[in-house]
Length: 179
View 1 (cartoon, one colour):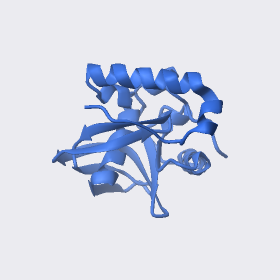
View 2: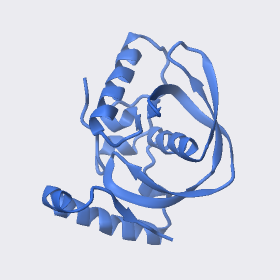
View 3: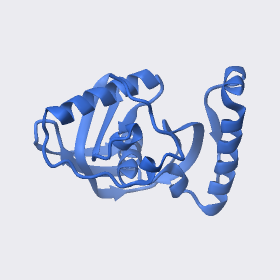
């Protein structure tokens, strides 16, 4: 069962998610619903529970048809720098170049209750950092300089005002390159 993805302005996106204390059938159903929602989005590769209104520290991602989930994640190491166009299902159609660490080591729990550590580089590292931000109530806008944020907010309002008619006339992916 797919859920509606919450978008920028919804207060749930600015709230810190609570740790999962017990991995039970309810958590497994949540993960299944998150994957259904991710697939229904058609262009997402990862989703955090707060994005569907559930304030639990869970996120899922799918790369090359491999489905993965982590509960109560944390970044325990990071290194390097990498600038990349970052988008968000909760801020649809806006893509912004954001600087983040290039490599990370993430620790969390899998659905069997086992502690897992995953080393990631570039895109996967960015996924982890972006989704972990969602679990802490942090959005892309919060990662920008004041100048970047001002320009991105202007573009976001333009996208919102244009609505579905503009989306039908122009490419779905709008890039905003900010320095």
